[in-house]
Length: 316
Image (cartoon, rainbow, N blue to C red):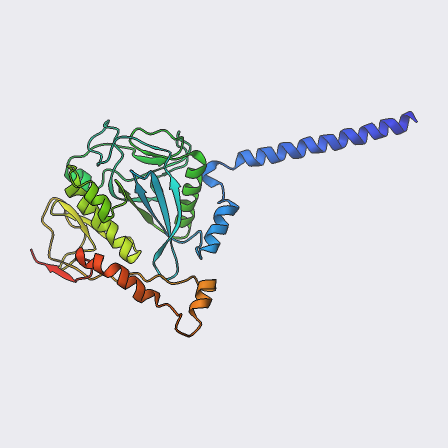
């Protein structure tokens, strides 16, 4: 009888030992996956799938200070970008208006780009990536400052701070886009959503002329769903300009070379292939909606107002 009890105890201790070892292995495995390598969540992958997007497709980001929002857009096979998700910004410092100098605790506004080398997996603010401030426009006007980031930890002294969980997802989306071959992604930082109504509301502010430059880039994306080509010359941002008889980058300090602004192709909303809306649109009859025509009817007046539908050639 004593031998049986001893045997049962031994087996019980063996099983407990196995459970402890297994738990330790699982714990060590979870600890071995640092935040910058954590995969996208099942929820994020499901959302990508329902929107016809691949994790490896290029991304584009927009930041809106007044609304405290960061948007991520993903490219589909047609070359246009489609809205993936809007994230609440946990904290940003300063006021509406661009960053001017180091230490002013202002978050930047303007057109920036982020390459793989600007991603920081070892940030003291959980994870981060550098916006690329100062850009050519900022340097032209003597604006100073370093290490302006989108990061976690929900604290800001001139950066755009997210919660740790959200910055992990944003970081992972950028990481996957780089793995898919994207060399850099554009990030446009705006004071607010640059609608006609919001511009009118802020027209008395001293930064209004600067914001009109940003609005041209905002409108271009709204109309085309493609991030615009952005240059700096003649003391201003140039949106969607094709420089003639000029090779290489333009000089921000000099007048712009002769350029043309081709009329952009207005984006036409198309239902996702295989979706209920796509199947409905394929049914012949009077109820079939021409989405391209509807979009042109909706956006053409606004586009014409800003000269975005007219080809333009400017000589210097």
